[in-house]
Length: 322
Image (cartoon, rainbow, N blue to C red; front, side):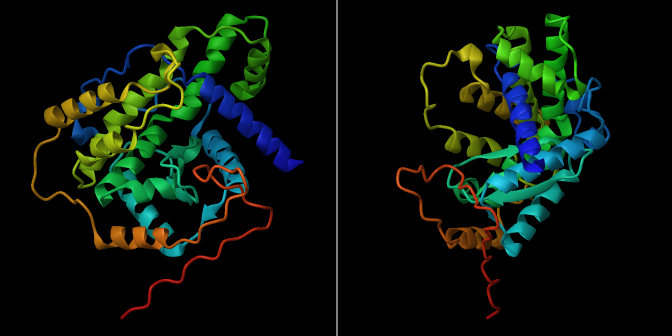
């Protein structure tokens, strides 16, 4: 029963977040003076003031959603890889505006992707890590997720969605956190105002903006982030029939242009930036050697693998010292 409740909660939250993820034609994020001040990192509130979730409630929600993800996905539980990834993430987090703890885990999937749940729970696919060419690129991917944690994107989108529904449907009974009103709204199949749909594009642009700063502040080459984006996101979208106005992310050329402008304008040049490390190369070797799960007939090997109840994956033994 508890699992089914968690699954329903996950589905409703995901539906509400995706509902808030469509967008207008151009990103609307406009940084203020504090947003552009590297010395203000860690002392500014970029998470916004209007949020139906306290930090404690967001942490509890994130934990529930994370349990559902890990129940239904095949995770990589290699202590060497996990320690390295979390060490990298904590270095970024302490040079960020995040007010919530950051936890990173790896999903055994070849797909080049990652996502961040409320409460600082971040998941990176094995395919994404293997696609990075340097520790700085991997740190850039983590910095993007940590920026969403600092922005509290998930719960702010849910709050904005609930507020939109309250104003659009006055007779609807509002349940805590907007879960019930969201599912009712979707069943009614009502139109979604574009003024609401643009919020996700704004959040993506904001996360790009802060991720570059966090990467730089942690000692990495900030150019590694747009380099990863350009290489990883160049593949054409699965559907060419999605209007630009309903894209969940700003077009890649627009994202890259804004990021490069920010780097040139706000980040002083320096010569002591970290590009990569032996630990990064060692972790990639361990992930390349990770046992591949045989795909069922007709299955898509690029999608995350579902884990059977009680199934565990034995980690690789740490390399012996020579």
